[in-house]
Length: 424
Image 1 (cartoon, one colour):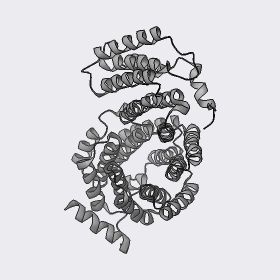
Image 2: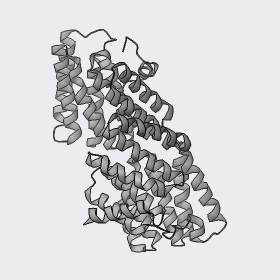
Image 3: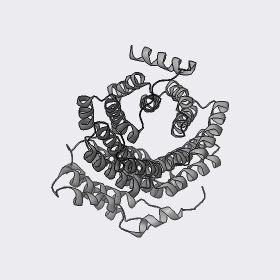
Image 4: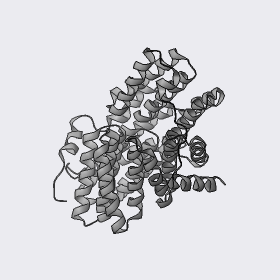
């Protein structure tokens, strides 16, 4: 890797390190467990900073004092759940790394904490932890850990719609993987870049990149990368208005994935695509399977949002209200794309039930979130819906009626049969 420290990692030192964790004070009562955990995370990561290679090493007495003080605070947090356990693990790992000189020992604990924060939708905090792992570890981490940190950093930034910094992280992962002759990680960095193109709305370019990646992954025998490429290509074709062509790719992704969470994400996206082409029963079968099996908050929320959408399409007001209440239990913590989609689909539902006032209110909320986070495709779609609403369009004219199923292709027939077997 050389002794290079990237500009973006140098820039994080410009302000108070790890101040993002103190933001919880502004969001919660000062005595709440969440605030105390945030303060604990701030102290723990400041302790980890003592190991950074670009700072004067602390004297043994100073290190022992800060170690003991941080451990005491973490001990007071014991019983506060999973996050407290992560913080204690990081303190132990940092102490062991200092004692043995094996600084790579901090990587697993920091990475695990970052994953936890991402799953809890604390994305800025997850980014801070991953940056800490990279900065403190620098050349002392195992190459595989460094690559994993950069790949995850790219993902967390993408989820925050920080497009350019996300691409930079994925490219850095690819650069390190290329130097290490790690072909699978090189391909995974390309997966990340394809996802940025896709979610940013550069769909034509994303399709071309996915097809190139799919060909390379298949020829080199990387099944997991092939599954991700099938998944990405299926979603991109759907967003380009070629949904019927995308459906078989999504089912193929479900078959190729070995990880259960990834399989259910493919199944959720398959449900969305089936709904878009009028295969409502198949869509609900896929989405209900996701709700039954899923534990990841974001994918579970997406599936519930789409079941709400199915219910409003069928003009089933009772089911619509039931899914609307269940879809986002903690709406403020969901990523912006999920919150935008939720308010969009709620607005569409109210339009279908001819409640124009509530429809406009929800669509304007969706537009506000989408505009703030540069979700350009959402912005374009929502603005069109608001224009149609002001022109007093009928519900189906407003939202675009889900089409009646047309002639079912052999590929779609095979997917439908496979879903029936899955449900059975």
